[in-house]
Length: 124
Image (cartoon, rainbow, N blue to C red; front, side, top):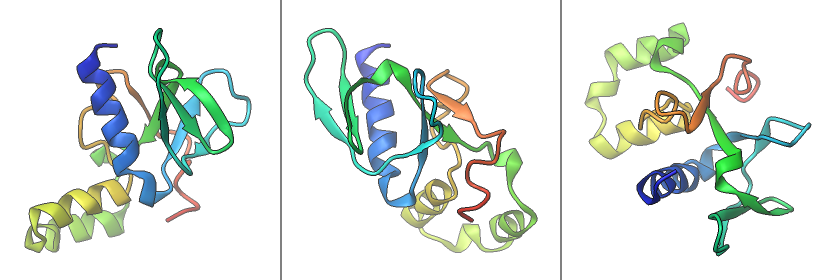
């Protein structure tokens, strides 16, 4: 993971904190976990984060669960087709993030997992 990739992933984690985003931690049996807080911890070998009570989690072991736009519900699709373009650019970005859509191609680039198990179904 390059420095640029790290910055991208950290930015996405931070931007999604208000939306109760969920992550996968590679060694955790209690997946998915909600991101309740994020704290950068300097580690010479890897960038680490603190999520909830767990600290020192190397970024390379964390992946956000995100949705592809093709997974929109009928209600989301109706809003997207009829009202989305009336929003400001910032409001559009917030709407996409609040619905957990991948806005930065993190799934395609291997830094996020596509939500195929419905981790956000009960939240919406």
